[in-house]
Image 1 (spheres, rainbow, N blue to C red):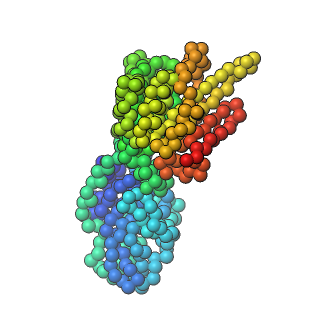
Image 2: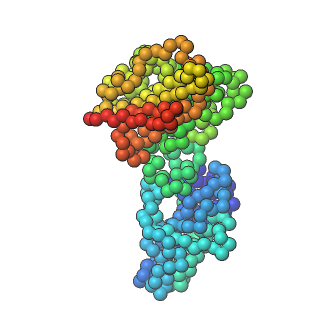
Image 3: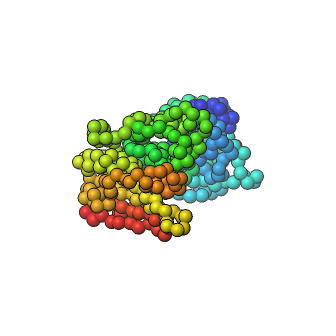
Length: 396
């Protein structure tokens, strides 16, 4: 991934061809072996770093900011004073594992911004290196040494520059290694996939035995084409195909989860239960409660208001860990829905499906330590008519 981006981006290729030690790691641009001076005139080598804004997975755009970063001690002038012309901030900035710049630099060009990353990196390198060269004439950042390609084991097909631009790569890594199961993809489950697919979890397993029908297109994220519908894909097959261009590790299981195969859920780090069958929910939750696997069960209800021609809906999210199991039975209905239930008639409620999914994923991220959790709730309900979320605490 790193080599391809460098070879196909003219500015990064120019840096590489000029002899600079260029690396792309965790969504950041790095130039290693930049000579700099300590206060006593001693020579050291540091790493200049920058955010990396991409026009496409294989080509850079103009830099998103003129600010750069430095791994090493603060560079000094040949007279022993700090290079204050670039001084900006002090870290360390926790970008990613093994990557924590110590300082930020700011030296905006007169034009207001750098044209490309060659322009940006060389500008800062020259300010730092020229002071070192005055004391140590032989030093040179253009070493022509090749940096081993950073072979990322990320699940993504391209760099996660969203996290790197926000400086939260270390936080994003907290979700790495998880194997997630989403059981049921009728509406809410598909939106949960859309959100979880954009995290660093290692695998997302999808369970559903239904076909992807025309009405499903109106209750799923994205836009299904007529050709998609005419192919007669399963829900699992359709969603695996749609998300494959973005990431690896989305694994389809074209089957319903029943008492006969529910034991396979024991292998997962976390399970989202998004089924509308009472018997299926009962089998799944009864099994999960006998394991240490944390899970979230979601539910929705839509009702017609007599005489108004309007609807009101509720979304429920119930979370459970190995330490919090007893509340599930009192909050989750295991009964099968009646045949005339509006939700089962596939009424178009994509916004409620999406809301239910957002609440579920937010709760999961709080449980994982990605988001701060000051509430400790394990059950919440959103009511559309009141535009209100009500939390229920579970005391251990």
